[in-house]
Length: 268
Ligand SMILES: Nc1ncnc2c1ncn2[C@@H]1O[C@H](COP(=O)(O)OP(=O)(O)OP(=O)(O)O)[C@@H](O)[C@H]1O
Image (cartoon, rainbow, N blue to C red; front, side, top):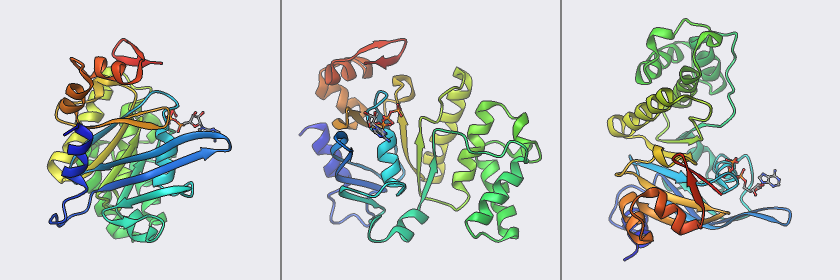
Protein backbone atom coordinates (compact mmCIF):
# COMPACT_ATOMS: atom_id res chain seq x y z
CA UNK A 1 0.00 0.00 0.00
CA UNK A 2 1.40 3.42 -0.92
CA UNK A 3 1.42 6.37 1.46
CA UNK A 4 -1.39 7.90 -0.55
CA UNK A 5 -3.52 4.79 -0.15
CA UNK A 6 -2.78 4.55 3.55
CA UNK A 7 -3.55 8.20 4.06
CA UNK A 8 -6.85 8.00 2.25
CA UNK A 9 -7.79 4.71 3.87
CA UNK A 10 -6.95 5.97 7.32
CA UNK A 11 -8.66 9.27 6.99
CA UNK A 12 -11.41 9.31 4.43
CA UNK A 13 -12.83 5.85 3.97
CA UNK A 14 -13.71 4.52 7.39
CA UNK A 15 -17.46 3.96 7.30
CA UNK A 16 -17.42 3.10 10.98
CA UNK A 17 -15.66 6.33 11.91
CA UNK A 18 -18.08 8.67 13.66
CA UNK A 19 -16.24 11.72 12.47
CA UNK A 20 -15.72 12.92 8.91
CA UNK A 21 -12.34 14.34 7.90
CA UNK A 22 -11.71 17.86 9.15
CA UNK A 23 -11.12 18.79 5.51
CA UNK A 24 -11.70 16.75 2.38
CA UNK A 25 -10.56 17.88 -1.05
CA UNK A 26 -11.99 15.65 -3.77
CA UNK A 27 -11.06 16.00 -7.43
CA UNK A 28 -10.62 19.77 -7.26
CA UNK A 29 -9.36 21.57 -10.38
CA UNK A 30 -9.08 25.31 -10.98
CA UNK A 31 -8.02 27.41 -13.97
CA UNK A 32 -7.28 31.10 -14.43
CA UNK A 33 -8.23 31.38 -18.10
CA UNK A 34 -5.94 28.97 -19.92
CA UNK A 35 -3.60 28.55 -16.89
CA UNK A 36 -4.40 25.46 -14.82
CA UNK A 37 -3.52 26.22 -11.19
CA UNK A 38 -4.95 23.03 -9.62
CA UNK A 39 -5.35 19.69 -11.39
CA UNK A 40 -7.54 16.98 -9.85
CA UNK A 41 -6.36 17.63 -6.30
CA UNK A 42 -7.32 14.97 -3.73
CA UNK A 43 -6.37 14.81 -0.06
CA UNK A 44 -7.83 15.06 3.42
CA UNK A 45 -6.90 16.47 6.80
CA UNK A 46 -7.66 14.20 9.74
CA UNK A 47 -9.31 15.58 12.88
CA UNK A 48 -6.83 16.81 15.51
CA UNK A 49 -3.81 16.37 13.21
CA UNK A 50 -1.18 18.77 11.92
CA UNK A 51 -1.05 18.45 8.13
CA UNK A 52 1.65 20.31 6.21
CA UNK A 53 0.89 21.39 2.64
CA UNK A 54 4.35 21.67 1.08
CA UNK A 55 4.81 23.47 -2.23
CA UNK A 56 7.08 25.95 -3.95
CA UNK A 57 5.88 29.38 -5.03
CA UNK A 58 3.18 28.88 -7.63
CA UNK A 59 2.32 25.34 -6.53
CA UNK A 60 -1.31 26.35 -6.03
CA UNK A 61 -1.53 26.67 -2.23
CA UNK A 62 -3.16 30.12 -2.20
CA UNK A 63 -5.59 29.13 -4.92
CA UNK A 64 -6.62 26.13 -2.85
CA UNK A 65 -7.11 28.35 0.23
CA UNK A 66 -9.23 30.75 -1.81
CA UNK A 67 -11.46 27.84 -2.83
CA UNK A 68 -11.75 26.44 0.72
CA UNK A 69 -12.72 29.87 2.08
CA UNK A 70 -15.16 30.44 -0.82
CA UNK A 71 -13.33 33.49 -2.08
CA UNK A 72 -13.48 31.68 -5.44
CA UNK A 73 -16.31 29.44 -6.63
CA UNK A 74 -15.46 25.78 -7.18
CA UNK A 75 -15.07 25.01 -10.89
CA UNK A 76 -14.62 21.26 -10.49
CA UNK A 77 -14.63 18.82 -7.55
CA UNK A 78 -15.89 18.97 -3.97
CA UNK A 79 -14.61 20.40 -0.70
CA UNK A 80 -15.97 19.32 2.68
CA UNK A 81 -15.34 20.56 6.21
CA UNK A 82 -16.24 17.95 8.84
CA UNK A 83 -18.62 16.43 6.31
CA UNK A 84 -20.32 19.69 5.30
CA UNK A 85 -19.96 20.39 1.58
CA UNK A 86 -18.89 24.03 1.28
CA UNK A 87 -21.01 24.59 -1.82
CA UNK A 88 -24.15 22.88 -0.42
CA UNK A 89 -23.90 23.94 3.24
CA UNK A 90 -21.55 26.93 3.39
CA UNK A 91 -22.86 28.24 6.71
CA UNK A 92 -22.25 25.02 8.63
CA UNK A 93 -18.89 24.46 6.92
CA UNK A 94 -17.45 27.95 7.38
CA UNK A 95 -18.54 28.12 11.02
CA UNK A 96 -16.02 25.36 11.71
CA UNK A 97 -13.20 27.08 9.82
CA UNK A 98 -10.60 29.63 10.96
CA UNK A 99 -8.10 31.14 8.51
CA UNK A 100 -4.83 33.06 8.71
CA UNK A 101 -4.04 34.49 5.28
CA UNK A 102 -0.58 35.53 4.08
CA UNK A 103 -1.06 39.34 4.06
CA UNK A 104 -1.47 40.99 7.47
CA UNK A 105 -4.89 42.49 8.12
CA UNK A 106 -4.66 43.97 11.62
CA UNK A 107 -5.50 47.55 12.55
CA UNK A 108 -2.15 48.86 13.80
CA UNK A 109 -3.65 51.81 15.67
CA UNK A 110 -6.03 49.73 17.79
CA UNK A 111 -5.01 47.66 20.80
CA UNK A 112 -4.74 43.89 20.73
CA UNK A 113 -8.09 43.50 22.51
CA UNK A 114 -9.78 46.16 20.36
CA UNK A 115 -8.76 44.25 17.23
CA UNK A 116 -10.34 41.11 18.65
CA UNK A 117 -13.53 42.85 19.76
CA UNK A 118 -13.93 44.45 16.35
CA UNK A 119 -13.56 41.08 14.64
CA UNK A 120 -15.96 39.44 17.12
CA UNK A 121 -18.57 42.10 16.34
CA UNK A 122 -18.25 41.26 12.63
CA UNK A 123 -19.01 37.65 13.57
CA UNK A 124 -22.08 38.70 15.55
CA UNK A 125 -20.53 37.76 18.90
CA UNK A 126 -22.01 39.88 21.73
CA UNK A 127 -19.75 42.33 23.57
CA UNK A 128 -19.57 40.46 26.88
CA UNK A 129 -18.99 37.08 25.26
CA UNK A 130 -16.40 38.71 22.99
CA UNK A 131 -14.42 39.97 25.99
CA UNK A 132 -14.40 36.49 27.55
CA UNK A 133 -13.37 34.87 24.28
CA UNK A 134 -10.65 37.48 23.66
CA UNK A 135 -9.08 36.66 27.01
CA UNK A 136 -9.31 32.95 26.23
CA UNK A 137 -7.69 33.10 22.79
CA UNK A 138 -4.92 35.45 23.94
CA UNK A 139 -4.06 33.05 26.76
CA UNK A 140 -4.04 30.12 24.33
CA UNK A 141 -1.56 31.83 22.05
CA UNK A 142 0.64 33.32 24.79
CA UNK A 143 -0.34 36.97 24.34
CA UNK A 144 -2.39 37.63 27.48
CA UNK A 145 0.19 40.08 28.79
CA UNK A 146 -0.09 42.22 25.63
CA UNK A 147 -3.89 42.61 25.66
CA UNK A 148 -3.73 46.39 26.11
CA UNK A 149 -0.78 47.05 23.78
CA UNK A 150 -1.16 48.87 20.49
CA UNK A 151 -0.67 46.41 17.65
CA UNK A 152 1.93 48.78 16.16
CA UNK A 153 4.14 48.07 19.20
CA UNK A 154 4.11 44.27 18.75
CA UNK A 155 6.87 42.30 17.04
CA UNK A 156 6.14 40.60 13.71
CA UNK A 157 5.82 37.25 15.47
CA UNK A 158 3.40 38.65 18.05
CA UNK A 159 1.28 40.17 15.27
CA UNK A 160 1.10 36.75 13.61
CA UNK A 161 0.05 35.18 16.92
CA UNK A 162 -2.64 37.84 17.27
CA UNK A 163 -3.95 36.89 13.82
CA UNK A 164 -4.09 33.28 14.95
CA UNK A 165 -5.92 34.33 18.13
CA UNK A 166 -8.38 36.27 15.99
CA UNK A 167 -8.95 33.24 13.75
CA UNK A 168 -9.82 31.21 16.87
CA UNK A 169 -12.41 33.67 18.25
CA UNK A 170 -15.44 31.91 16.79
CA UNK A 171 -14.08 28.55 18.09
CA UNK A 172 -13.37 26.81 14.78
CA UNK A 173 -12.32 23.16 14.68
CA UNK A 174 -10.18 23.49 11.55
CA UNK A 175 -7.48 26.14 11.15
CA UNK A 176 -5.84 27.00 7.80
CA UNK A 177 -2.58 28.94 7.81
CA UNK A 178 -1.04 30.18 4.55
CA UNK A 179 2.74 30.69 4.89
CA UNK A 180 2.19 31.98 8.43
CA UNK A 181 5.90 32.45 9.20
CA UNK A 182 6.88 34.49 6.13
CA UNK A 183 9.11 37.42 7.07
CA UNK A 184 9.79 36.21 10.64
CA UNK A 185 13.14 35.37 12.20
CA UNK A 186 14.08 31.83 13.22
CA UNK A 187 12.98 32.18 16.83
CA UNK A 188 9.62 33.75 15.99
CA UNK A 189 9.00 31.03 13.39
CA UNK A 190 9.69 28.28 15.92
CA UNK A 191 7.50 30.04 18.45
CA UNK A 192 4.51 30.23 16.09
CA UNK A 193 4.92 26.60 15.09
CA UNK A 194 5.04 25.52 18.74
CA UNK A 195 1.87 27.41 19.53
CA UNK A 196 0.04 25.96 16.54
CA UNK A 197 1.21 22.44 17.37
CA UNK A 198 -0.09 22.94 20.92
CA UNK A 199 -3.50 23.88 19.54
CA UNK A 200 -3.49 20.48 17.84
CA UNK A 201 -2.18 18.38 20.73
CA UNK A 202 -3.95 20.15 23.60
CA UNK A 203 -7.15 21.54 22.05
CA UNK A 204 -7.75 18.94 19.33
CA UNK A 205 -7.84 21.56 16.56
CA UNK A 206 -7.11 20.29 13.05
CA UNK A 207 -4.50 22.29 11.15
CA UNK A 208 -3.58 22.68 7.48
CA UNK A 209 -0.21 24.48 7.41
CA UNK A 210 0.86 25.70 3.95
CA UNK A 211 4.60 26.22 3.61
CA UNK A 212 7.54 26.06 1.24
CA UNK A 213 10.02 25.38 4.08
CA UNK A 214 11.16 21.81 4.79
CA UNK A 215 12.27 22.58 8.33
CA UNK A 216 8.71 23.44 9.38
CA UNK A 217 7.63 19.84 8.85
CA UNK A 218 7.91 17.39 11.73
CA UNK A 219 8.53 13.63 11.47
CA UNK A 220 5.12 12.77 12.92
CA UNK A 221 3.11 15.20 10.78
CA UNK A 222 0.87 14.34 7.87
CA UNK A 223 2.16 15.76 4.60
CA UNK A 224 0.75 16.74 1.22
CA UNK A 225 3.25 17.63 -1.51
CA UNK A 226 1.69 19.99 -4.06
CA UNK A 227 3.70 20.81 -7.18
CA UNK A 228 2.58 22.75 -10.24
CA UNK A 229 -1.04 22.21 -9.24
CA UNK A 230 -0.82 18.45 -8.68
CA UNK A 231 -0.58 16.37 -5.51
CA UNK A 232 2.60 14.33 -5.91
CA UNK A 233 2.51 12.61 -2.52
CA UNK A 234 0.43 12.51 0.66
CA UNK A 235 0.62 10.54 3.87
CA UNK A 236 2.65 10.34 7.05
CA UNK A 237 5.96 12.15 6.56
CA UNK A 238 7.98 8.99 7.17
CA UNK A 239 5.90 7.08 4.64
CA UNK A 240 6.20 9.80 1.98
CA UNK A 241 9.99 9.78 2.43
CA UNK A 242 10.12 5.98 2.23
CA UNK A 243 7.85 5.81 -0.84
CA UNK A 244 9.92 8.47 -2.65
CA UNK A 245 13.11 6.57 -1.83
CA UNK A 246 14.62 9.60 -0.08
CA UNK A 247 16.63 9.75 3.13
CA UNK A 248 14.85 12.85 4.46
CA UNK A 249 12.19 15.33 3.42
CA UNK A 250 14.63 17.32 1.27
CA UNK A 251 15.74 14.39 -0.85
CA UNK A 252 12.19 13.02 -1.03
CA UNK A 253 10.94 16.39 -2.32
CA UNK A 254 13.73 16.58 -4.89
CA UNK A 255 13.02 13.06 -6.10
CA UNK A 256 9.32 13.80 -6.38
CA UNK A 257 9.67 17.13 -8.18
CA UNK A 258 13.12 17.14 -9.74
CA UNK A 259 13.88 20.38 -7.82
CA UNK A 260 17.07 21.36 -6.00
CA UNK A 261 17.31 22.60 -2.41
CA UNK A 262 19.29 25.35 -0.73
CA UNK A 263 19.49 26.31 2.93
CA UNK A 264 16.68 24.05 4.03
CA UNK A 265 14.14 25.44 1.62
CA UNK A 266 13.44 24.18 -1.86
CA UNK A 267 14.05 26.22 -4.99
CA UNK A 268 12.59 25.38 -8.37
N1 LIG B 1 -5.30 35.79 -10.28
C1 LIG B 1 -4.54 34.99 -11.02
N2 LIG B 1 -4.57 35.07 -12.37
C2 LIG B 1 -3.83 34.25 -13.15
N3 LIG B 1 -3.01 33.30 -12.67
C3 LIG B 1 -2.93 33.18 -11.33
C4 LIG B 1 -3.68 34.01 -10.44
N4 LIG B 1 -3.39 33.65 -9.16
C5 LIG B 1 -2.50 32.63 -9.25
N5 LIG B 1 -2.24 32.36 -10.54
C6 LIG B 1 -1.34 31.30 -11.05
O1 LIG B 1 -1.80 30.07 -10.50
C7 LIG B 1 -0.71 29.25 -10.09
C8 LIG B 1 -0.81 28.93 -8.61
O2 LIG B 1 -0.63 30.13 -7.86
P1 LIG B 1 -0.85 30.21 -6.27
O3 LIG B 1 -0.73 31.66 -5.87
O4 LIG B 1 -2.10 29.51 -5.92
O5 LIG B 1 0.40 29.37 -5.74
P2 LIG B 1 1.07 29.37 -4.30
O6 LIG B 1 1.52 27.98 -4.06
O7 LIG B 1 0.15 29.97 -3.30
O8 LIG B 1 2.32 30.31 -4.50
P3 LIG B 1 2.78 31.55 -3.60
O9 LIG B 1 3.30 30.97 -2.34
O10 LIG B 1 3.83 32.20 -4.45
O11 LIG B 1 1.57 32.44 -3.41
C9 LIG B 1 0.54 30.02 -10.46
O12 LIG B 1 0.98 29.57 -11.72
C10 LIG B 1 0.08 31.46 -10.55
O13 LIG B 1 0.86 32.21 -11.45
